[in-house]
Image (cartoon, rainbow, N blue to C red):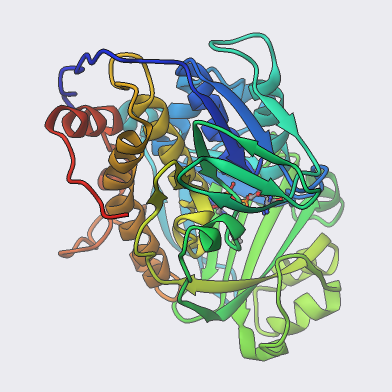
Length: 421
Ligand SMILES: Cc1cc2nc3c(=O)[nH]c(=O)nc-3n(C[C@H](O)[C@H](O)[C@H](O)COP(=O)(O)OP(=O)(O)OC[C@H]3O[C@@H](n4cnc5c(N)ncnc54)[C@H](O)[C@@H]3O)c2cc1C
């Protein structure tokens, strides 16, 4: 993984950067840019009711940056993943097991599983605390952005206030308003899949005599060849078990929309009548059952306009089947941090954001397509790679061995084509 020599460029100056949206992507960008020496303000439409509860796996391409940024990973109550396990749909018998081996020795950092809310809380605290490199970020809530002027760097909010910054990072999620405001109209198709998510405590699983699901340090799958798929994993120091349960959208009507629609244990169980009875028993006793409507977004024509750059789900929303959405947002954030740091940043904001698009768009788009492929074919998922390689398939090495800093150095060193306005 030999990195290119770091270019040293003069002209660095401290910027005043706005981030719209304080989800997992926006907070990661805040941390990276703070550490690069800039003043960062996050504008969030909500009062932090936004993050929802289920597991979040973070492969080494994401975890190495969380560690590098000094995030207190222990405080996020991690589970370290060691195995991928494939079960027989009806009986639950183990069909296939893929040990991740000494993943850390191979890829430099662990493959973690977190609870999304733990991650959001720790990131939010970290960006604002005095401890750590750079100045604490400001987080302003109840600031719903209505639109931006990309040339001037101005944001207009619902409350009538406008602010102007040197650069604007739009991390306002899959339904990004900022994306629309810079002229992008997404081509979107509803997926033929929907997803229930639910959680259950380890204590409850013990009471139900289902403790075999608690301590496997694994992501466990049922189905996955076709639309139906159950993905089970432990998080929150193995005190919580989380399930994602994919099913045909037609089952309960394509008219239901959103990511937070409540459902009952019976509705969840009835969706999977022939499933392993142990998992159905878990479902009957699960908490916080919600439905997630899934969408397929085509690649956007561009991500950057003048002083505005899209990041995370605003730039590359993807189906969850490679577990890479947050990891790609971390990579976006890491590239911004590398580009805007002293030695790489020469003071030209618009040019630097063009570098960002050139570096990030091809890789994130490839993962976006690979996620759509994996929706109904578990063999397409990275991690099941061994023995299944074929030309064009996304591999665990391609994702986990990626030399991001070397990639940034090579682009900054060689210059980038000018994109049209
Ligand atoms: C079922 C499922 C499972 C997943 N599992 C994994 C996994 O295991 N691993 C992984 O890496 N990824 C996973 N992901 C993907 C990952 O969760 C997302 O990619 C990631 O959370 C996106 O973060 P974001 O900050 O870009 O967007 P969001 O989390 O959507 O954040 C957007 C923020 O912007 C705010 N906002 C929106 N509009 C405005 C506005 N106008 N003004 C101000 N603020 C605004 C919102 O309130 C929100 O706080 C999963 C996704 C799904 C659907």
